[in-house]
Length: 115
Length: 112
Image 1: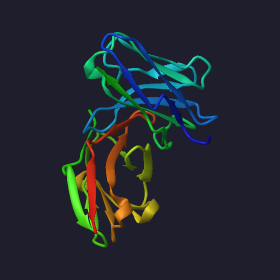
Image 2: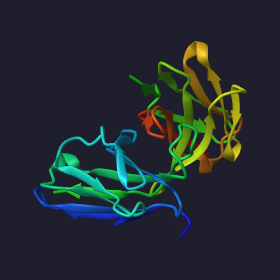
Image 3: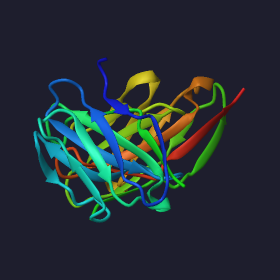
């Protein structure tokens, strides 16, 4: 496919469990972003990768959240010891560069529900 | 600090009527501004963007937005709304790199 792909589309997990959310960016896009969208809110920035490295992780809420992009393409967002407050839609976006004027293309998101 | 405010949580308009969605921003430098639309079960789609130059920006699906520096606003407009425009609309500001700060969104309902 030509767009940003996120899997799974839905994930239900029990409180305290570990989850991984996957993002396949558009081929050739060097920048990748993770956002979290809680119910009734706009997306909130979590972390940004330029290539393999995390250029800005200032949005990660605490050390239970971690993300990797080992080969500069696919990224995985990892959440340890999930809490009910982690329930949200997690959005991934990619862009061909990292400038402010570069359009970010969003995936459809992964809806995470912690019960 | 940068922020985006969308004062209207929910707006209802009749099909064929004009539409204006409000967006105010706070940013210490020249803002890069965006409007996105999100339909149920869909990802965010870019409608239009403003970086510099002409303050009236044209986008897809017949939308336009006007940047007013004096009012710190970037309102979205459409002359005639279609039922398919019903969705959630987000205004966003680019700070460092392409990192976006979003408003809380405005849900548009279109009545037939």
